[in-house]
Image (tube, rainbow, N blue to C red; front, side, top):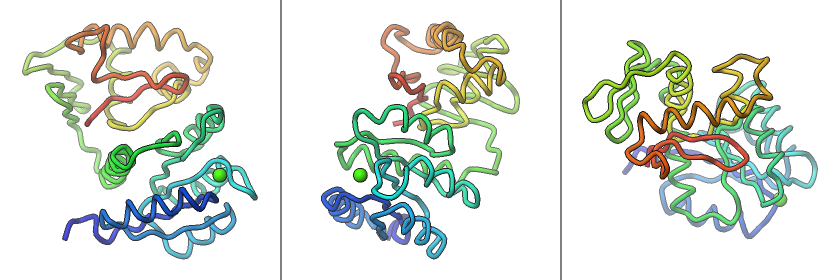
Amino acid sequence: MTAETDRVVLVIEDEPQVVRFLKASLSSHGFRILDAPTGQKGLIEASAHVPDLVLLDLGLPDMDGVDVSRRLREWTSVPIIVLSARGQERDKIEALDAGADDYLTKPFGIGELLARIRVALRHAARAGDGEPVVAVGDLRVDLAAHTVHRGGVEVRLTPIEFRLLAVLARNAGRVVTQRQLLKEVWGPSAIGEAHYLRVYMAQLRHKLEAEPARPRLFVTEPGVGYRLRTE
Ligand code: CA
């Protein structure tokens, strides 16, 4: 039995086909699935059963998925992965800024889904521990000591480069929106300054990627933000 055996995933989704796919694929990996076809029912199920993770469709018949994630965040830090269709870019970003953890764009494969779920559950388990060292491949970020090593060699970063890296490292594996990055690194007044990110992400890649032009660690999520890739 794996540790995932008793994990409960609440699927808030109105498309029966998607629900069937999620039920079949996740239960074969040891998850227990609850499902709700509307936002209202989803909110009720979430408070009644306190799931370990929520998969949330953005296009629900009764309410906006963004509002569902906002309502959940009023009382729970349960990981939320939003399921979005093409053309829901704005909603997706709004949901992430409202506290959702990550997203998947339909159609998605089971491998991708499981990887996202693993990252979200791991992150939830770690939250509050204040784990100071994040290691990804040959990259080692010590958030407490403010040091960065690549392949055992210390890399010097400017304070802003380090702050940017720290936000991505604390969220390793998950997407972080442009808005979240700008707010955390430069402050709320910089939320419109997306070019800061382009400049500083290029600098980070230059210092920390083997091939800066073909980033493997610091990946761009087009139109959404950036992700420090862990798998
Ligand atoms: Ca839908």
